[in-house]
Amino acid sequence: MKVAAQKLEKMTWFNEPTNWEIQNNTLNMFVTPKSDYWRISHYGFTVDDAPFYYTERGGEFEVKVKISADYKNRFDQAGLMLRIDHENYIKAGIEFVDGKYNLSAVVTHKTSDWSIVPIDEAIPFVWIKAVRRLDAVEVCYSFDDQTYTMMRNAWLQDNHPVKVGVMAACPDGDGFDVKFEQFKITPLADQRRTEWLQKNAGN
Image (cartoon, rainbow, N blue to C red; front, side):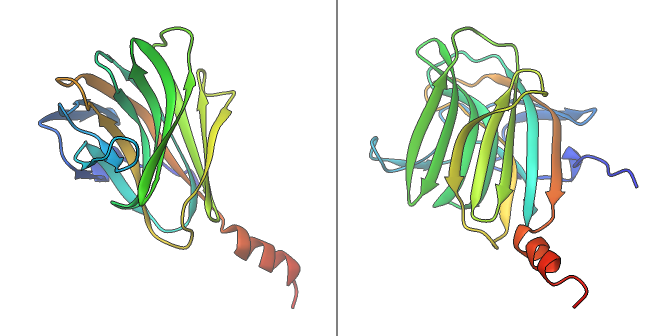
């Protein structure tokens, strides 16, 4: 049986932007100015107001998307987000800082942290993939959708529904255009249950 990719039309907005459209399962949007996701640490403020377009999943899965954008201002960013609530989320993608592109990940549990992998040159697009297994999320990037390199492995509570989708933020600027293509979620068999079934085969 052939399984179709997650249809963007069936997803839900959190902080819906003013301008967006979906065509051929591609989401284009103009990112809300002065918007972001961050909690407390280093900067001393909390914001939770950037566009996030998501569906909800209860188990283990792989999610990936192709991202291209017209980054303009410091901290312009676009990527995937996995979110339990306002105190527990992971966002990962491209972030434009001081004129340079960075693969960026923010992991938030009560407070936020930030890690980056600098990119030497401008890139027209990137694929970001996240794999949720047990209590961890592995985030990877690719420039060709063939070879993926891990950029972060982070804890996220398991056995708990999670909102998963695409996000973009413009903390310091007046907005920018971003395009999300080939968004796909692939369900994965529960690892603990699979191991139990294997150990108890025929019983």
